[in-house]
Image (tube, rainbow, N blue to C red; front, side, top):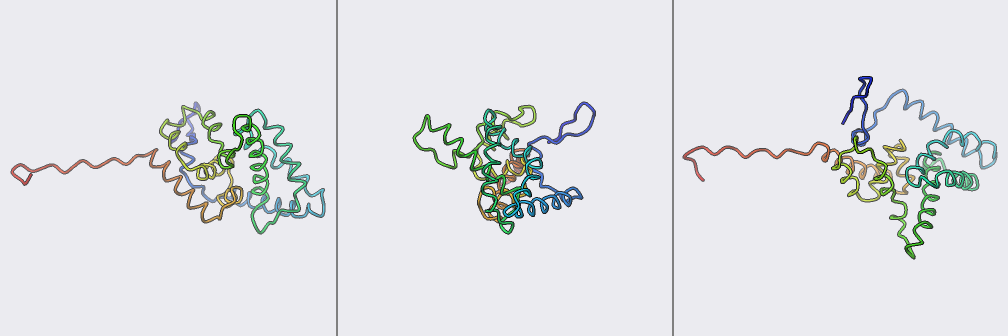
Length: 223
């Protein structure tokens, strides 16, 4: 689904972007180089704390956006908590298990889950972790009604929580499927399968199949 802005250029809407797989490009190669540098910096920071410093300006905006879309009022405080926890736990980063970016988003996810559990504890004694980390209610309130059709809104709401979270990580946070899998804590193959299923449901909602008309009955033919 594309819309034309005031300058005449096409603008891809969030709903359309959700159904379009990411294509390789020179920018992807540059991003890969940056990821490799971040992986090395985070790994080195276990012995050299100063190596951790450059990660903060490079990832703060993305992490703040992730938190602000899910807990707007607490995003600043949560971001500070993310960096405190990330620095304290930096020795636990294993580049063989995923990228530095995925690891940082994983820390942010745990910080967000703790915050949401605390916020919901007022009205519930215990909160299921899946419900606590599911950002859909906040996301639903922030969707642009002019860009996302009610049918897409309904389809997103009906997706299983894990599929919805994977899709939001890939579309909004621009993580790769592998990184999203690491954040959620599921195998990469499972994440790709669930992403494919979620994209298919959204694509079907955007472009519903039209049932073919029945073949005309010839006069004098069998009933």
